[in-house]
Structure formats: structure tokens, C-alpha cells
Length: 356
Ligand SMILES: NC(=O)c1ccc[n+]([C@@H]2O[C@H](COP(=O)([O-])OP(=O)(O)OC[C@H]3O[C@@H](n4cnc5c(N)ncnc54)[C@H](OP(=O)(O)O)[C@@H]3O)[C@@H](O)[C@H]2O)c1
Image 1: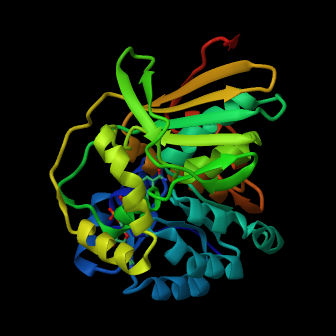
Image 2 (image 1 turned 90 degrees about the vertical axis):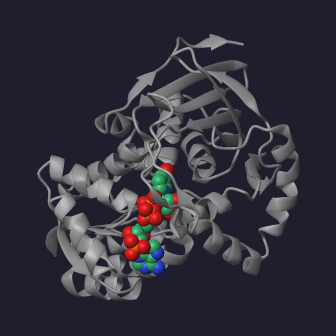
């Protein structure tokens, strides 16, 4: 086993951010990518090494041969890419981290818990801003408490965008969020998307509207709390009433695989202009209600959400390389507790508990 951290999708926004943040703590990542020119540019930019692998199948076969200690997979959609990479990691005992942020990919990862435990390797899924920022607040609020009745989590990302195309990985995940789901009576079931709109006053006094958009946060908040009813919402969900009214029909259409693939490919080519971060902070937020009516609310405050998506896997990789963690499949705070979010530069704001 070579004491190395490999980053698959090393040319992407997240891959480069992870490598840069590993470099800041003195660790040299090996960036794995399929385009030699972009790969070497990314490696130079982030003080990393480069490994050219024309496809993910080649990358998986390199993992089996070279046995890196930790593999970070940033190539979405993770329902498609994770199985082969996890298989390779499990075969040689490499730890595995990914940025999955959709319900299907997180469910698939949790199903690999027993196999990971038996193989003695750790699998961490959802290691990006959305899952980490929201589940960490839930874990913090529920520490030492019985399972609550109801949880709502909201993610409010703020990030600078670099010029380029949106990319299939990101669009695939966003389209995954169009399948309305929530946890009702302890079960994952269908729900209207972009519903349950809520006007939130952020701790800095500004306001934002969030609405239901069930990504991986939903499952992570459910597992972290054991609550019977869980809803996950995002400020990225359109808040216009007209768009909200149209979305259930769009979401039904997106269940047709051919239409989804076509739309993903087209949207992936849309060019995105460079934009500044719209607000100073990104936020994770949770409201937890117990059966006796007690309600607790908490926030996690951090800077740029994309940078945080680089920082979380970098910190997890560093800890796994140092022998931390335990075998099995987990989300970040489930494995390392709520302090992980703070190690990555975020801060909790927890108002005093009260009754509503
Ligand atoms: N959990 C969270 O909160 C969170 C936050 C941010 C992102 N994410 C997820 O993380 C993923 C990456 O996001 P990103 O913004 O970094 O995307 P990105 O900038 O588009 O980067 C994607 C990377 O994957 C590579 N890639 C794409 N398809 C590939 C394939 N078939 N074989 C090999 N490599 C392939 C790309 O290589 P090329 O350069 O060769 O195209 C690129 O290096 C997305 O799925 C996104 O949804 C999750």
C-alpha cells in the first residue's frame, strides 16, 4: 500500500480545490485525469503529481495495481462512477471518499457498509458542502438526546464561479434533486419539490428563501437524527411561484432516462460566466423538534461553499491517512463527529434551546 492520496477528476473544480488544500497541509495529492494537457496544468497549479488514466476503468485498474492509501472520487454522477472505483478500493484496502450529493448515490453507498466493514476499509460519501454542513448541525443539536420527531435542514451555499461549462457531473446531481422526496413516518417517499418554501433570516440579518430540494442532505439528516419526519431544502431551489408550479411536471418528465441523459448533456455545455461569491458566508441550518414540543435550531457558518467542498475531503483524507476513522460506510459527521466541520474552518452558531 503506498501512502498516497489520489484524486479522481483531478482537473475539475472540486479536484483542484482538494489538491490545493492537501498541499496547504503538506500532503502531495496524485491527480488522476483523462486529458494530459489539463491534467498537467492542474497538477502544476496545485503542487500535485499527475497520473493519466484515459477512463475511470483505467483509473480503477491503476488503483488495484498501485494500492494508494486513500482515493477521493470527484467524478459524478456517483451512481455511475462509484461502484467500479469502490470495488477496486475494497479489493486492495484503499479508503474511499466521494462528493456524492444525491439520494440514490448515498443510498447505494450505505448498502456497502457491511462489505466495507468486512474488507477493513472506510468509505465516506457526501464529503462536500451540502451534506457536511447540514448533517453536522443535526448531529450537534441531537448530541446526547433521544431521536427527535421532526427535522428540517436548509443549505445556503455561496460560491464564486469560474468561467467555463457547467459539466455533466454537476448537472447530473442537480437533476437528481428534481425527484421530490422526503422522509415521512420514517420512510423515504415521494413529495412535491420546491414546496415548503421558508423565508429564513440568517444570523447576519440578511434574508434568503429556501424550498424543498431533496439531495443527499435528506438521507444524512435522517441517519444523523433518527427523526420520523425529515425535509431537506436549499436556497438553490427556485423561489418563483410560477417555476414552483411547473416543477412537478418537469420532475415527472425527468424520470424518463433518455430525456434525462439528453437534458444532462445539453445543460452540461451551457457556459457559466465568472461570478463573485454572492454573499460573504455559506450556511448549513437545521431545526429539530422533539415529541414534547421542544425545538432547537442551529447554524453552521463558513466561507465559500466550493472551497469547503475542497476542504472537507482533504481533511478526511488526511485523517484516514493518519489511521483515523473505522471500517464501514459513513457520511462525514457520522464518522468524525460535528468537530470535523470546525476543523475545516466552519463555526457553529447555536442559539439557546427554547420551546416554540
Ligand atoms: N456534496 C456536495 O456538496 C458537492 C459540492 C460540489 C460538487 N459536488 C459534486 O461533485 C462532482 C464534481 O463537481 P465539480 O464541480 O468538481 O465538477 P467538474 O468541475 O465538472 O469536474 C468534474 C471532473 O470529473 C472528470 N470527469 C467527468 N466525467 C468523467 C469521466 N467519464 N471519466 C473520467 N473523468 C471524468 C472531469 O474531467 P475532464 O476535465 O477531463 O472533463 C473533471 O475532472 C459533481 O457530481 C458535483 O455534483 C458535490
